[in-house]
Image (cartoon, rainbow, N blue to C red; front, side):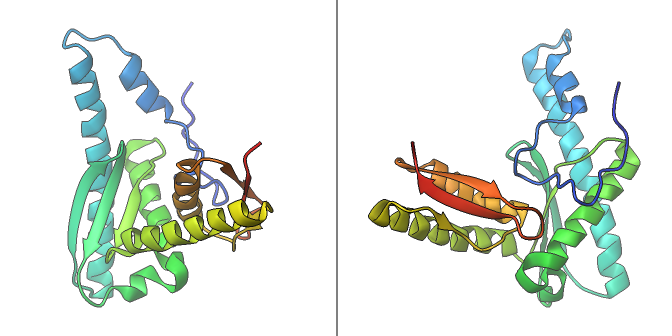
Length: 196
């Protein structure tokens, strides 16, 4: 049975702890005459379709707001991605990416409305996510250094699911430390501690 309910607002479909949707599992598991390469291509074409749907939605929003921006739709890391590039887009990012997160959820709902299945779409505006990823890598490395130096856990400031995923990725790549998220949105944060 496929769950076609709309995800609740507190159920983030972001990077943190997301399992593939049932549709993605079915695409991988079905046997076809074409073989495994064709199955993977079919899954990627569905992801690209999701990014096209989201790009159309974002383009409509830009038209309403009278903002200019170039929109690229692609598939990266097994998920649909929409990138908006142009000047005068800071208002679409908002303070600490809050507006961007809201726009991403709206774009995901637009995809859900047309496809009937949840999407792990990632929306980026003006390269905000790439820049933030670099900043968070520095924050994570600093926390790891403190943990290794003092042997005490370090609690970071509350972060969005995207931000937490970036920090977890950096910490998990280093030896002698581990990270976990604690708390509830919007105050969910990462704790970096010595590995057992």
